[in-house]
Length: 360
Ligand SMILES: NC(=O)c1ccc[n+]([C@@H]2O[C@H](COP(=O)([O-])OP(=O)(O)OC[C@H]3O[C@@H](n4cnc5c(N)ncnc54)[C@H](O)[C@@H]3O)[C@@H](O)[C@H]2O)c1
Image 1 (cartoon, rainbow, N blue to C red):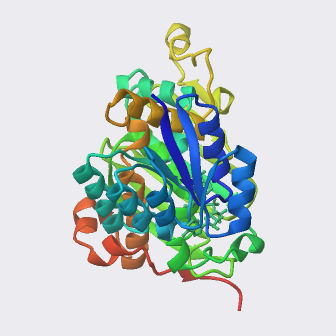
Image 2 (cartoon, rainbow, N blue to C red):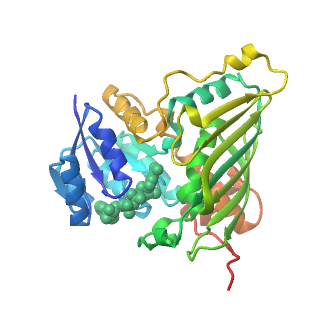
Image 3 (cartoon, rainbow, N blue to C red):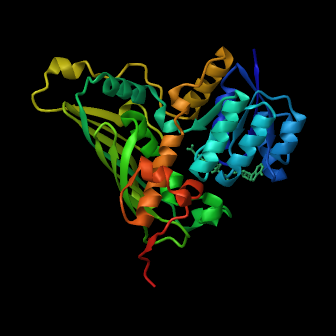
């Protein structure tokens, strides 16, 4: 069985999806769409794609598809996902999947009603090392997790915000917390499970944008772990860093946009035997994180007719964390699941209040 796939929005990230599809013999990339003819043609020529359409509606009407990958700006994800489900097509959607929890719930509801797959791209969960660490934590091999750090210290200078949809609440839906920090917070939540409480602030320190360029948050997870999370687009030495201190060890991963075995380290606590520490060794087979293993996991499930794996579901959790950060910063108090569920303002949009400390 060969799956017929299409990509909507042939910009920067679409190349990672095209490479993943081209590498998989079970899939044919049969069509693309982009409102820009120049980008559409250049992309289709590069990957030898026959079907070329200006809009996703033309594409859905003209092509017989099994799965569509949405690589468009985030404000288009809801409408394009709903249209794909109405056409009977499975969806893989780039992060952030939606601009609000209400939008995401609509999309998930449409998927469930149509009986179609709705996979979200949070590729930091992938890679053999991350799977190994998740296994150790889930099995209790590292003892009880206690404390965590989650840092997304990136640099995005003024030119990054020249793209028309960036830098605005309407186009981007949120600042660096939604656009960048969500990746490491998703990885941390993938390892820790559900969150319980968030206490946060949003700051605009330097960039001329509507949203925050830095956020700082304390997150309490349901398993009792207390974490601090910082997201920034102002950090010249860029890094993405997650650290978890458990009863028996410190687990760390440091990278920028993707990790492999070398990016991870487990340091035993004093008194831990060499034998126990050796049992935590990373597997010899080392597949880095990235779009390819994520797309492959979706294709595996579609070909087998099985439900999607955890690797591409639970998309609500990272969006809840981001929403809770925006709500907490705006209300000036900690946010719980119950208070977030009752918060109509933040269920439908993330437009938050930011403390502006730029020099005037
Ligand atoms: N997972 C990751 O690591 C990662 C990395 C980068 C971007 N992203 C996400 O991917 C999405 C796209 O980001 P990007 O950096 O590739 O943006 P981009 O601006 O480079 O590409 C978006 C493309 O969509 C096209 N487009 C706009 N409206 C369209 C429409 N109605 N129909 C068809 N095409 C349309 C634009 O012409 C553009 O070529 C965003 O949601 C972004 O957050 C994810």
